[in-house]
Image 1 (cartoon, rainbow, N blue to C red):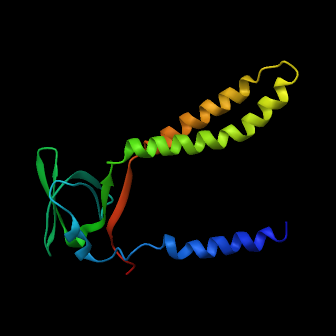
Image 2 (cartoon, helix red, strand yellow; image 1 turned 45 degrees about the horizontal axis):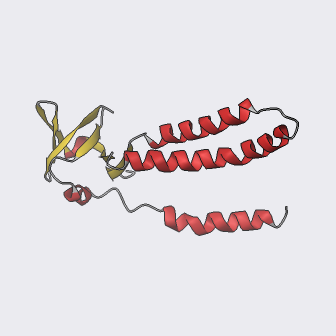
Length: 153
């Protein structure tokens, strides 16, 4: 057990640079957006606007919200996120496979223990189904990638 703790800490430390995100406090990051992409803008009053990107300038950011064209002044923009929904099916299948596979291990062990006495294991089947279903539900959640966030002042 004592050997596992340093190995675990080492694995966490090695992963830290991989999880580091690029600087998000540059207004120039918004220039990578393409017209029509789905974005989410949070203003200084913590009001969230969801719509399609129209344009960005040094003065502000414009997006189409329903039938209205909304422009948020640069000074009022707190965060801009790109709404990533293009890989939802893939994410659902992947998460369902992982969660279902993880649920199979303890359920399989219990099923083997119960089957030698002629008993069935309804809880085992329920755990497997819950694993697959829960994984699919988690994978269906659309993700957002932050493009711009106001830096600490």
